[in-house]
Image (cartoon, rainbow, N blue to C red):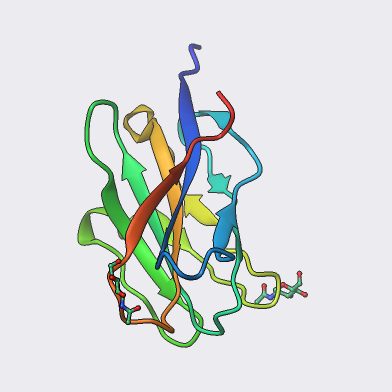
Length: 136
Ligand SMILES: *[C@@H]1O[C@H](CO)[C@@H](O)[C@H](O)[C@H]1NC(C)=O
Ligand SMILES: *[C@@H]1O[C@H](CO)[C@@H](O)[C@H](O)[C@H]1NC(C)=O
């Protein structure tokens, strides 16, 4: 029996106003492999003084731009894109400040870069994209 491996590259991304430089997200692993049908958890820890930040997950397939998967709020449901609803979910824990992304029944086509992103709700100003490549 042949088992198929897929690679999930993890990068993180913070979306925040220029003024609040303390807000960020951290992801522990850089690249992970899994077998088809596994359940995969992609970790993300966020750091912010905001009590009700928005957390986002994006998927970037090879040679594509990042696609929005879902967002989460401390107080509230958040939204998940219909295309991802079946197998992708995240749980926000505001005590541990984590928002792990869970992918059920993982497929080779899920091989992608996954971005965890944070946007504080305190300021209503334009947001800037910051891409922090994990040491590569
Ligand atoms: C959130 O994280 C805290 C600290 O790690 C843990 O004690 C708590 O059980 C978690 N809550 C949920 C709902 O998982
Ligand atoms: C909003 O952002 C713009 C451009 O980044 C900046 O010039 C402006 O001062 C900001 N406004 C406030 C209220 O922070």
